[in-house]
Image 1 (cartoon, rainbow, N blue to C red):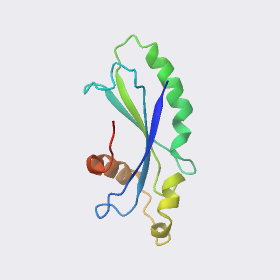
Image 2: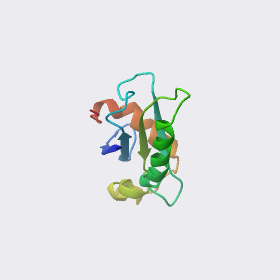
Image 3: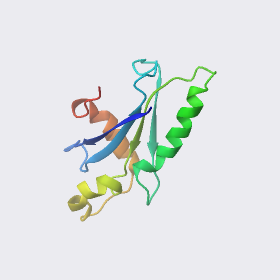
Length: 121
């Protein structure tokens, strides 16, 4: 069974927009606390939202359970673009002034400033 938890990060003043992300993991996985296991990051295209990846993650988990090659995945994260999904609602006022659509800054901010805002069990 895959668990998930939603997060909102406010990296201001380093980045002007709020970031929404969702973490997916298997609590019973032998890799959940393995520092050498992979963290997979999913970003969506224009017109979608972070949950678009959930069917893909489900299929990926089936393949990982059958894994015989030693691929270890600790967790997966799906991130909303700042002008899509939940993030668009939270950033509505800022987005009225314009937005430079570079999703990479959003992803970088999540993992750069998350240690002080995201409390992951």
